[in-house]
Amino acid sequence: MTLTLQDAQLVSWKIFRKINDKLDPEKGKNWNPFVMVTDLLKEAGGVATAVKGLEGLESPDKCEAKEILARGLNDLLYSVFVLAEHYGVNLDETFLQQVNDYLLGFLT
Image 1: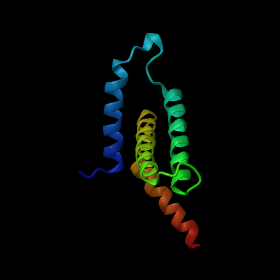
Image 2 (image 1 turned 135 degrees about the horizontal axis):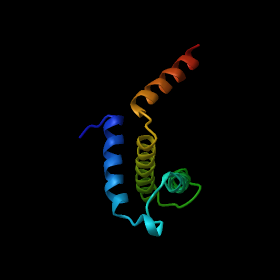
Image 3 (image 1 turned 180 degrees about the horizontal axis):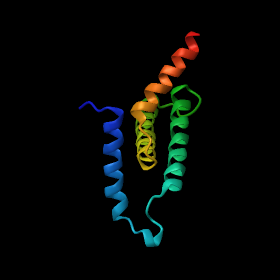
């Protein structure tokens, strides 16, 4: 299955809403933007640890580190997609613009 960034963003948002709507907001268990960002930072730490393992600076099991890296990167993407949708950011447009800006800046 192939998804555009916009498709992935919308699918992630729908999944997030289904999960979040079942949590009890009165007990503070639902996810708000602050909780999403802190989770994103937690996942980034896991990605950093996996990369250290793959580079031989930590955990010697590279197969396990690669699996952890894959899961962590996917968790990061999910969090980015949910935050983007929450704030109305179109990642398809902004990603292409950013890549274009990088290329123009590099080539000039």
